[in-house]
Length: 392
Ligand SMILES: Nc1ncnc2c1ncn2[C@@H]1O[C@H](COP(=O)(O)OP(=O)(O)O)[C@@H](O)[C@H]1O
Ligand SMILES: N[C@@H](CCC(=O)OP(=O)(O)O)C(=O)O
Image (cartoon, rainbow, N blue to C red):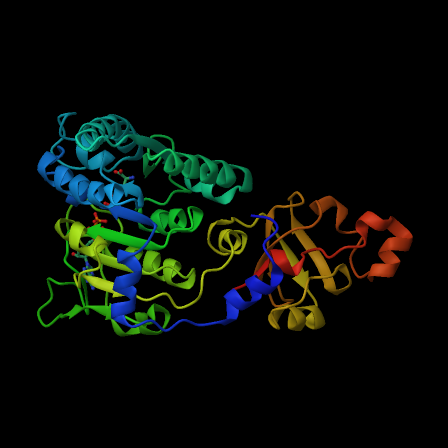
């Protein structure tokens, strides 16, 4: 994530792309790397068993792209929905311990079926189980990224799910929609395809009379207020349309186009046909480091900027200097993500701290030459360098 030029990062933040629907569809069809996310109800039966026909059809569509030279990362839900039937439960368990045990059984069944289905096309699969924490800690994030890149290089289809058996309830994705947008960032995907049990985004939950289909969303950040979205109605899904739109928004502001449609439309969606809803990217792609800071990083502390420093940070091109910081809160190490707040407690930005939290109190309010003179050259640097700072 280090070493990308400031110039390109700045232009990535400011230039806008306004793609037509046709251009978005073409971008998906010609994408080198696509993250495909499939929801629980698209892989399983209501009885809590895998639906091998549905799974086989999805694998067929993905294999088609792989055989044409494309890279696919599959983010697959369904561990819990495929595990409760074999364990003798009538419906998806609701308590955490049983959900975790069910996921542990279902995940194995899911992977066995994927291995068999992809095997028919001579394609190998690799499993990656990720917790929310893995996407927040720089070291784990880099490890996951490296593994994923190597799998793709080896021609393997990585199959990702949240590590449900171990995820704690306080800190978990729950749905896989937002996880898929983070994975799209992680692998620098050219497109995200969200496959679910409804053919498109509607102006209101499709069960409501009068709701109608939306085929193209040119700017998701502008249109979210105009539509009404609800939760899951399938009994096995989790996030409903709310988390799918969050995923599409995360992808859009990262420069990644998204198509949302029903799982049986996977093939046409990947080929760029006009199925489902296409979401245009609203920005050019940013650097992986900035995207990680913006979406995945979990701040470990706060640096409070005085009004001058707050204005400089808001301007978008300044580093946060110790001279303009009045307080540091929290226990963090150099390199950890932190909030940058104004004196009224408003979050202005997220950034990576340049120093450990215990080093900072001695530096506060001092300008660069005072820091150099009093503390030495290694302290004469910003608390957060502008390359490591992302406005909210
Ligand atoms: N505005 C909307 N447009 C389309 N679907 C919606 C909308 N609001 C709520 N939904 C619901 O979201 C569901 C899909 O979410 P979910 O059940 O979590 O799927 P998955 O398991 O595929 O992640 C749809 O079946 C639909 O009932
Ligand atoms: N990680 C969970 C996903 C939970 C879930 O229901 O997700 P989704 O169907 O994508 O809304 C599982 O595999 O069961």
